[in-house]
Amino acid sequence: MEQKEYYCIGEVSSICNISIRTLRYYDEIELIVPEIRKEDSKYRYYSKEQMVTIIIVRKLRLMGFGLKEIKQIVTHNEVNMLKNCIEERLTKITQEIAELQARAEEGEDFLRRLNSGREILNLYDEDEAFEDKTFDEIKIEDIPEISMYYDRKLMESYRNEDVSLERWVGINEEVAKLGLRAIGPIIVTFHTGLLDQFMSKDCEIEFGIQVAASECDKVRKFGNFKAVTIYHVGPYKDIIKTYIKALQWINENGYSVIGPVSEEFIISPVDVTNESEHVTKILFPIE
Image 1 (cartoon, rainbow, N blue to C red):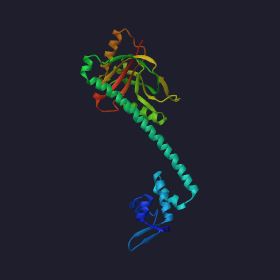
Image 2 (tube, one colour):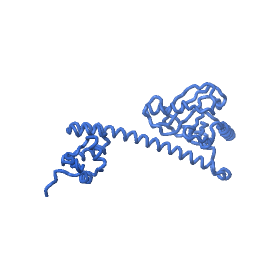
Image 3 (tube, rainbow, N blue to C red):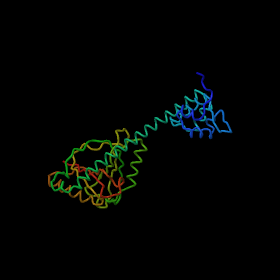
């Protein structure tokens, strides 16, 4: 069977699995110009060599090459140039995969935190749970040890109801800049007298965020202690009421607070704007 020397645009489209519209566009930008063009009928005919080029172009497009790069590659038609271009592209693809994986992991961590907060919100929404005392609002927990990136500063005339957006945003940017992976919520620890953060005093306050294990000198261990925990649901400005409730329970049950109190933001003011859906876990180290 004699092989054809030239193929019309419809045949090329079918054989090479590429649309006629794309072939016409490649003709317009002079990437692949049909070897024969009949002006009277405007028919386009491609040679066998051009069909090979079309297959190469399609392969390069699937790898993410731009048309300008492809035009340069097929114009030179050299193995070494093609090899170098593909190696560079594969390096870039590998980087993109790593970045996408990091985004996916960050999204999964965020979703887990939202799901955890949603469970707490659902329990608080069920009035019958409180009447039947099926929900233990105050607990004693062993706080597991985690790695935490931290930033500790003295804040003058601090009022706990004020959310420091600058420090919230700053700590996330610092973690990203250092290439650390955040895997948990923001944790604020008050290295000051008990309840001083509510009295407009100068307070030593540490903003931290759980990260994957790292040798960075700004990452320390947090946890590995026993604590009384309680969730505060709703506007942050009302959190002192939850503090007082927990401290009364601690005193009534013969415990003592022996370290700085921390707040773990499950659903924070920078996650959702609806204050009624904010969930903060307060940790009182005890003995």
